[in-house]
Length: 354
Ligand code: IPM
Ligand code: MN
Image (cartoon, rainbow, N blue to C red):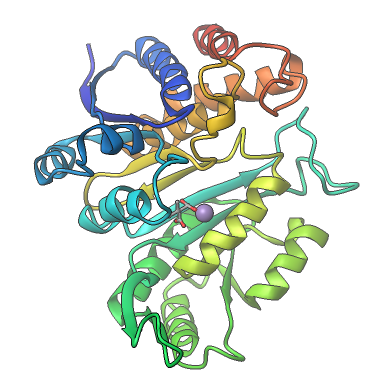
């Protein structure tokens, strides 16, 4: 018997628990075939738990998560909780406290999936966005003056440290090299307006680039990136960008690859514990109906295995997802798959074992 990994599971809110259950089924199947095992420990945190107990994220839970080999997250978000509380209190706190400074979001169109981009096929849409995940506008710097008065001032600052920018850029170069596709890394910024923050990003990018002569470098402003992602997505291999721009362009990316039903991401600390999630959210209106697409969660599970180094098991999951999307699933949208959430999980389990 191979290794045993300790996986912390945060099913969370809404459809989170339903999709996480399918992810776990698939993880267990892949582990069985590839001869390792996973032990799952669930943690009850999220909007539901907060409304019941007033507790958001106890320090003891953060410390336990820090000890895990990986974290599998469903979704955090509740319609009855004011925006910002759960996002800052759980998701962003975990990213920051566990120093998950990379947010890795593959944008890949699988055969059989409909993209809203006319005349684009799987060969055209296959790139990865590496989003800085610990700084920028998300750092929470700023404040109010004279809040609620006519003289009110609100300041929200973007924090960019040389260390933070460099470690992200370095990760992106390494990732681009090991991905071994077009070996092209595009910096997404806004050097024409954000002349301090993206000056630092641009200088760092080209300095680090000297160590990677095998990687082609490119730069585009974030607004132009949005345009090219729609018009010529085949130009991209790996894109590196800051936290806020990365947040925005990856929602665009998710749509380009077919929708939130299949978009997955990882919050990665290359030296510590990483957390994987479907990027779609808690989808309250579909909760408990068994019709949400679990593929985003299953692909997040695949990313988790890749990060653990179980690359064969991860490849098995990807092949199974590809086959199910190509041969079986009619539409990736909730309620339109032609299968229930659990049936999609079963289908993929069978392909993983085949
Ligand atoms: C994401 C989400 C989060 C973010 C929210 C929920 C705080 O949109 O993971 O992209 O902005 O990072
Ligand atoms: Mn987002």
